[in-house]
Image (tube, rainbow, N blue to C red; front, side, top):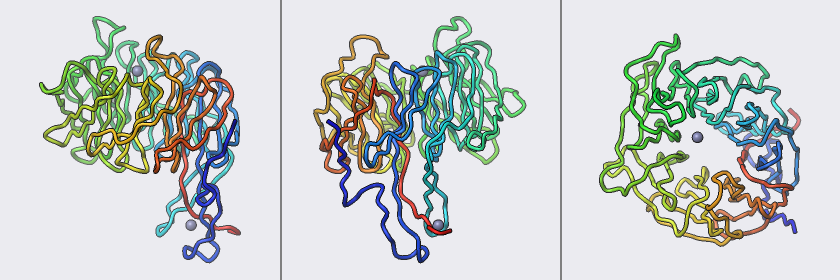
Length: 405
Ligand code: ZN
Ligand code: ZN
C-alpha cells in the first residue's frame, strides 16, 4: 500500500498567495528525495509531496549519494564502477534580499562525470568538491558551478600512493590524507596541507587510522584512532590551523570512523563502538559526550531544519530522536523489521534523511520509504520504491516565485 501522508493544510507543493514581496509573488515549497538502489545502477528522484517518481537515472554502478550544501546538485559516487556522476536536482534558491526565490525545474543528469579508479570519499567545502580515488591515491577537484554549467574543469592533486583516503579543497590549499608508507592497505596516518603550487605547508598532522570527516559552521573535523583533528581558518587566505584533540581518559576504548556536522548548531556527531554515538563540541572543555543506544547502530543523520535533533536507526528496527543539546534520546519509534548488523557491513539496511517536516527512512527489504512526522515523531505513511531503496539524500525548501516575470 502506498499512502501520501503530507498534510494538505501544509502541503509542501501547494501554491499559497502571499502578501508582500511583490504584488504577484507566490510562496512555493518543494522537496525531492534522491534514492540509490543497493544492487542496481539506478538513482530515483521522487517528489516528496506526493510520492511520485519524477525520474529514474541509469548509473554505471550502484551509487552512494551526496548532496551539495546549496541543494542544487547531487553526486552519485560509484566506487567499483569508477565514476562520480553529477545530477542537477532542479531545485534552486536565489537570494533577493528581503526574500528568497525558489526555482523548480525537472531533475536531470548534469552531463558531467568524473572518472577514475575507486572513488569513495567526496567532500564539499565552500562549493568546491574533492573526490578521492582510492585506486590512484589521487583527488579530482571541481566546483558545483562548473558541473551545473556543464564545464568539465577538473584539477588533480596526487598523494604518494593509492589508499583509502580523502581530500578537501580548503580555499587555495588542499588537505590530503597521508598514506601509511609501510602498509598501503592500512588507513592513512595524517593530513598533509599543500598549497596551490603543490608544495607541502608545515608538517604532516598526525591522525592515526584516519577515517571520517565533516564540517559544521567554520570548523572541520577528521576522525583518528587517538581523537580528532580540528581544522579552522585563522586568517583569510592563509593556511588552515590544525590541532589534535584527544578523546580523553574518560571515554571507553573506541574511536569514531564516521562523522557528520550539525546545521544551525555547531557540533559533530560520530559513531563510537557498535552501540554508541559521540557528540563532539571541539570548543567545549568537555568536548566528547557519549550516547548509549539500546542495540547496535545502523545509521544516523542530523536534522538540518530542527538543529536540536539528530536521528539514529538501530538494528532492532527502531528510529530514535536524539536531543543533541541534552545528549538524551527523547523518542523511539518501532519502524521496520529488524536489520541485524551481523553479516556484511554493506548489506542493504536503512538510511535516514530529512525532507521538510518528514524524516524519511529507507527500508530496502520492504521496498519502501518509511515516513515519520518530525514534529510528532509518529509514522505517517510510506512511499513504494522498486528494488532495494538504500542510500538517500533530500533537497528542497520554500521560497517565492514571481509568476509572469
Ligand atoms: Zn524574488
Ligand atoms: Zn571510507
